[in-house]
Length: 127
Image (cartoon, rainbow, N blue to C red; front, side):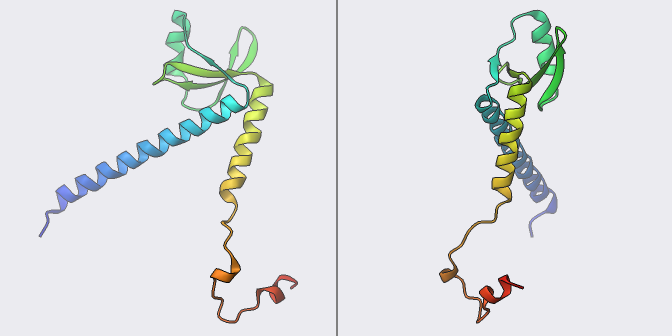
């Protein structure tokens, strides 16, 4: 009989790894959307920028920079941020919404491959 504790540890480790992989994939999606929307990649140079980057939440954030609204998506691991204005943010939102719709769309299957057991779906459509 296999002891439960070692199996539990292995399962927890596998779940953590899968969680990190999905987070990395989500960040990559956000970065790709930001670039497609016209965001600029900025590498912090001043001490204030360097100090600010790790304090930003790991999502798109609105900050006030020199009296202007600026949208920022930080990537602390790469020591950079995706920065844009309202126009770029609106484009980012349209891309995000389009991606969400694509994920929500059901996969199409050819009807010839399915066996409905005599069910006539064409008659149900008009009801």
